[in-house]
Amino acid sequence: MSVWINGVLVPPEEALLPVTSHGVTVGDGMFETMKVVEGRPFAVRRHLARLHRTAEGLGLPVPYPDDELRAAIDATIRASEPPVGWVRLTVTGAAAPAGTARGDGDATVVIQCGAPTSWSAAAIVITVPWPRNERGALAGLKTTSYAENVVARERARAAGAEEALFGNTVGNLCEGTGTNVFVGVGGRLRTPPLSSGCLAGVTRELLLELDLPIDEADVAMSELTGIDEAFLTSSTRDVQPIASIDGRSLPSCPGPLTVAARQAFAALQARTFDP
Image 1 (spheres, rainbow, N blue to C red):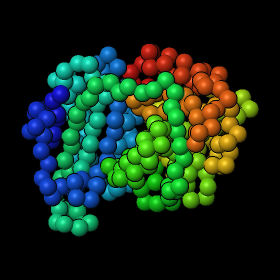
Image 2 (image 1 turned 30 degrees about the horizontal axis):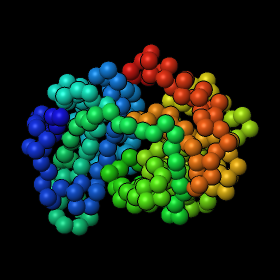
Image 3 (image 1 turned 180 degrees about the vertical axis):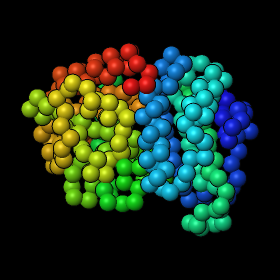
């Protein structure tokens, strides 16, 4: 797999960052991961729009215009040995002195590809006790500061689960470590609003625009014991049913609302690459 770094395609072993990169020393950066379908990235426009929202929130400018980034994404996919399942664009802070202060240079942009990700037919998930801060400076931003997510995912793995779900500081459902969450109750779907602190997922956004019975509404963590069905969404898994939460099997997996969402999203993906 070739890697594009600051305008040049190189072998992975030549894609180097300085040890003083702010992305390395303090996790100061942002990223977007796009699904690749038949050699083409899906929903690039929305991913780049979210990249700029994160850049604004971080105060870390993206040093290339969108047309150059699109061309670089396409070039990296073409230069990578198939099958390519995803492409990731990462922007890291410039080299800087030790500590939190940023350096004066430009950020580094890295684009890399990978093989398709294999997800289970239905996910076993757990909840974790560490709340998301829905009022924090990074709430809803797609940053590279993922250590909290790693810790939660490792807890899930140790429990034999595939994903971990976070609540927020007021006890409402927020998101997974790399997913948005939809729950089904009484014939309708609910997904936490952005005010919960969750990421504005691209798959989530697209589902909300389809003709589906979905409400953006808070879901108390205590309500998870009474839901009929649920699913996870992300750019590489699309719509993945949830089989159980904290050891409780859901009554319906995949439930009718999950099946409808999965079919609608697959139809969208089949008719356009850049919705």
